[in-house]
Amino acid sequence: MKIENRAQVLEILQMPMETFLRDVVPEARKAFTDQLDGKLRVTSMMGFSNICKNRCLYCGMRAGSTGPERYRIPPEDVIAAGNTAADAGFGRIFLISGEDPGYGFNQLLRITSALKARGMFISLACGEWDAAQYRELCAAGADEYVIKFEMSHPDSFDRLNPSTDFDRRMRSIRAVQDSGMLLASGNIVDWPGQTTDELADDIMLMKSLGISWAPVIPYLPARGTPLAEEGGPGSRLLMLREIAILRLMIPGVHITAQQPGEDLSKGLSDPEGNAAAVNAGADVLFWDLLSDPQARSFRVIDVRNLTDRGHISRVAEMTGRAIDTGEYFHEHE
Image 1 (cartoon, rainbow, N blue to C red):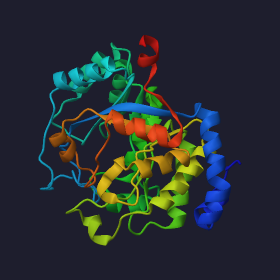
Image 2: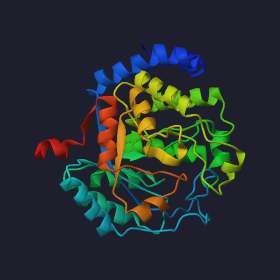
Image 3: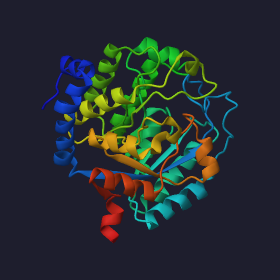
Image 4: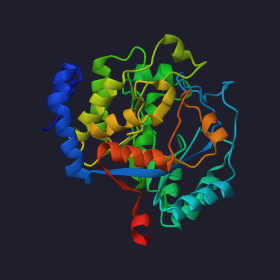
């Protein structure tokens, strides 16, 4: 099955669920095996600062929020955590933060250079920078930069992201592409007020950008945020439709499998939710390097509950998939 245009995307988004499960999911599952050898891509992950200057209407770490206890992990501790992950056999690390102007760009370069010296594949998500800074991050050893467009319609983006605007976000995305780093980008699925047409446009934008990874999840309300008052959560079944479409539309793309299940209190580490995402074509799982208190405070959404290695093994067993922790592991096992 090939999906190449917007009309085909809309057809899958709108078809009866039983038709989707019968006709599309098996094709996406086969495509996962053919494209990625059927392996789960497991990445170590660390949210090294939950301080953010932005006031996005959906984020629990937005500036002015009184929800999470704020923290900023020193660069030497981030490097030490990355070394621990490498020693444990992880060849990839995803370093993410709020858009924290107090952290210091040179500190990001220092962290990147140190972990690249360990041979790690480094993904960063630290907000908007100028084009020269993205080039510096690439030169320091960053392989991939994660900057989500969130919503593909400028009016929706500008309303929900008042600290920036859609044109600025897209300039940053293009600058990442021009820097030499891979681009990871994507949307929020089924936020309050999103239409099916908007969702289809989101998917088509991901295709046109040629992304390496789709870090996508459904909308999950964060307490005390303006958007939480408008509704939610987003449909996890609609999320599965997007996952399958992306798998069939963008060969080789990585897609976040850390998805919620029916019981939202389990957060993003519900084995049933993760397994359903894998069976629809997703492949990316995370091993969180944060301590429990900090993990609870990295609160983009209310309940993240990321994984330990036992959880990853359980999802692999449930789905019959092998685990790939990265090149470092395979070169040194």
